[in-house]
Image: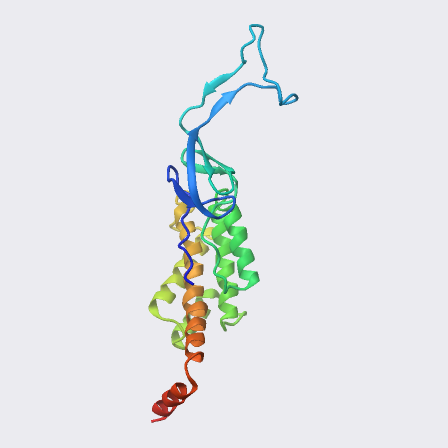
Length: 230
């Protein structure tokens, strides 16, 4: 069954995958208000001598909250960006990625909003591990491993572009470069998609094709072998 496309939380959208429960659900929006109370006595409001709340006001429109219809949890936004929960909701890691690569992917997702550069560095490391799992040499650089795959005809031009894009943007996170990741965090968000794209093309797609071919009738597969032998 084909997975539903992951819909990132976006300010003012009424449906997306919740940052809490990761379920695609309806979201209700509202502005925040401040209502004075004593934190030491949360069940009672704080009143002044006239019996009115010390503080009650609508906070400016930079502060908003969305509530998930599925888990009923609140997501808090400031200037159209999520500030709680601190994790950034990005697409799920491909199921066929190894646990080691998935862990790096998930760690990068947790820190993306705080440090796009650190997230990019983790995703670059995830690519390095993935290349080794796909047959690359651990003693070689990412660039050299990609070059070896190209020479051996193991990857097509689109996968090569995906690997090189992730490698180059990831390098910017640890070396001075022309791309300011702090000013353009959306570029780092694309790196999560690139990891999944590479896994889909190199692992998931071939695996599903092999499974489909293996399910063909034996006689049909034997006929294919005779044809290929000439």
